[in-house]
Image (cartoon, rainbow, N blue to C red; front, side):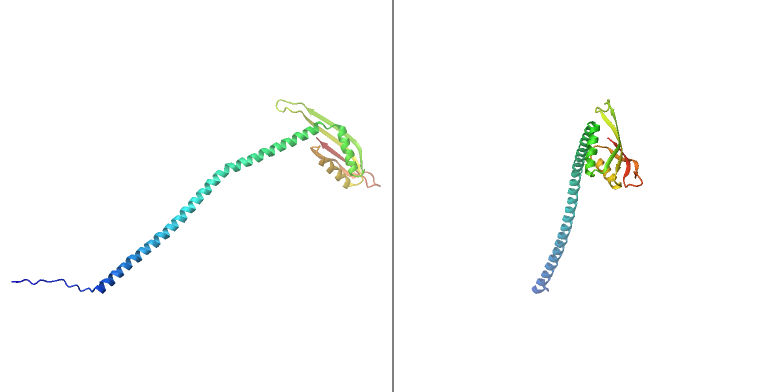
Length: 198
């Protein structure tokens, strides 16, 4: 008795198989393309984030390094200013130490010339108190005061006189000692007092 042999029958035509394989291949490639696009986008985003973080870190490091340098520069400027002030004060002290009454009279004569002679000194008082050096202060200092009673042709010249004394740099302070008032009812001259400390 012979057994019938069955052979498999391929119901899928080569064209159908080729079309199916092509569609499957397209799906795979499209998925790979989408995955590659997503991966590239994530990579770009991550790179930009890492770059911004690194830039911030670099900025923080630079600022941290600049901080001490700025402090040193400001400290150097401050010390330089202190030295300048100390030198100025030393020069002023030296001027005041060499400030005899004749120098005051010479200054008054100069100011009188600048005011075209419209100045009369009626009274001149000069006092000087020299403080000896101590353990805390090795330099002797002089504290002097000059009191002047003056007459000028008008109030404008009295103001100019005070400005000239202040601008001389020889006095610590120049102030009115008495009010400006008319020297006489019939004249425009004014009388005033000035106190100068040095």
